[in-house]
Image 1: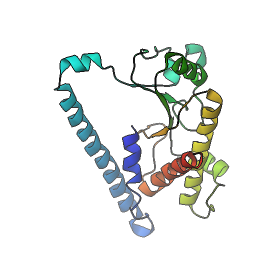
Image 2: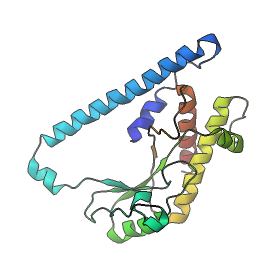
Image 3: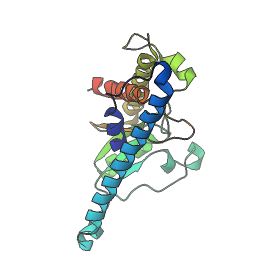
Image 4: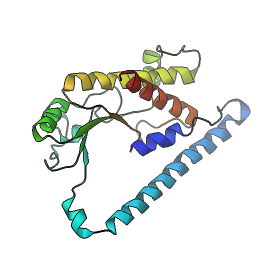
Length: 212
């Protein structure tokens, strides 16, 4: 899913949608956005097919890595109680957010403790989401002067990254990498203007990099 973020960042060279042609450019930009995602997905599926065509013995002996997050939490914590991966998993990526930005995985601490106990290599990820108007108003102040919507959205991205890093700091999770999960979300759709989406992801990445 980090591949999606790469596709987002790759759109930074697109023109800003302004003036009478803004609707047409926004639609074209959105089409390019999803076309690129489809091409990436096709390439990934092709690679998976190549892997599956290899040795069955190797495939059976090598379990896949897995991401875990709020769905593995108990129902009392708002999750589904899904099982944790096998202790023989080659790696696990632990979610810091609970499906969207400015939320916290309610059982991230216990998942971090599981990772330490089983000694499974672990990294973390956060889910970035395009901000609501209320979030833009609340988090528009930041590293960039909020003179344009793009700058304000960038600042919201920084705030999203910092919020997730605070969850990481108190979780006890030992990791030196944080992945950015960019997904299509019907309840929280992305902007039709790719520049706005790029600005948000750039802000999130800037916050993570600033943390070292």
